[in-house]
Image (cartoon, rainbow, N blue to C red; front, side, top):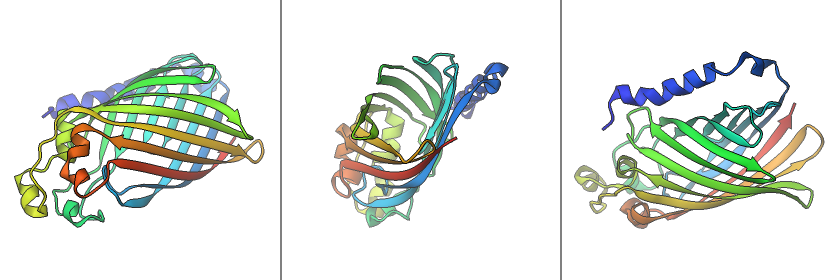
Length: 259
């Protein structure tokens, strides 16, 4: 288990990096787009049931190439003046899993509170192509784990829409996998599920598509669909294999406004 002192380091680094941004940044020209809508998401990671969740977006990009992008549960800030390369901190929210989930057996397992993950990312964007590598770690003593995500995509215009298609894969540490996919003796007694120990490894791969239709220079409508396949010990967990589904979908729709 990581010490509390160690887990505060990513949050401190995020704060220091943001504070170190040049003062000229805030005086530069900035394009801001906001969005709000609703998404259908799995009740918990690995669930076969779905629930509605708010879908929020904020995209602020400065002419020098700096940006702050918030989408769904993740905030990324690019701290280098480049329109091709990006490097910066990440904050990511992960929701709780408790007795409110629809599956009765999973609801009987120990409660996992929501947590804030922090880390860093690096990536590039060139002629429609983009790719990034991200690492985050738990900061709230909830799963004590790390997640490393590689994603890539291509943006293009078609049928009057601005589209992006992408794919991703995530590697999860032992602590993360143990928290969300293992079934210890107490959980087995409470839920009736078989005992199971999940190890680190490639947790999922996914594909996604988003499309935006612009009604005018300001207003637009964005739809998105994401499919993720849980793999290895995540897929084989009784939480998923017996009570859930390794095929995970997210569907979202939101109105956008560009200032």
